[in-house]
Image 1 (cartoon, helix red, strand yellow):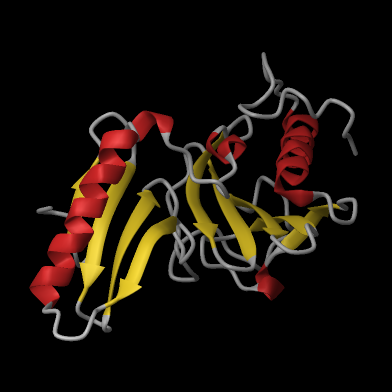
Image 2: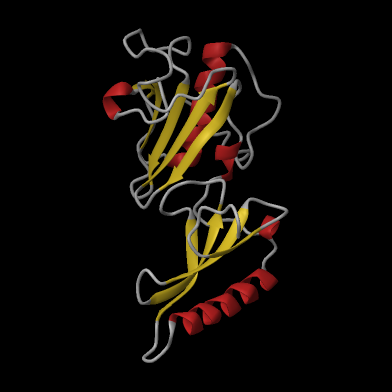
Length: 215
């Protein structure tokens, strides 16, 4: 698809941020990948179909085979009805006063980066608020919520910019062990509400059943 940054044959959903791609050529394999385009990272996709090229099979033939499987998958799934099994929907409902800047889904962890409304995006030290001031919502534009996919352990921290290193982050909430991303998101929202005095009218998307969890 023109304008796509994916190096393959790609179809993009019109009703939701989902895309389907067929890829071959880099290795002797052909694969169909389904992407949640709201998410960055190596694991932002699933690959329901993948196989090696057969003896004597050309790349064009393998690609045509992949296209057939991709079309069949799209005929069975509407973009707005397909959800990535490992994407946490509550991520897309930011804390009060924040916007979602980036959601990374990697093999080992979720990394969620929120930015305060009204602040400019700052990728690294070249921009953003200085990091030599006392960490607070007044001096740090970013709120990181991270959780390991294996253990479920997580952190909530303030940071001065998007690509902050660990030593540039300041943890603000002591999370229960193995709490997982959903609980970390809820406790992060509660912390922001306590710090700012702002409240929500309703539970965040996907978190209405987490009332038993609090700090």
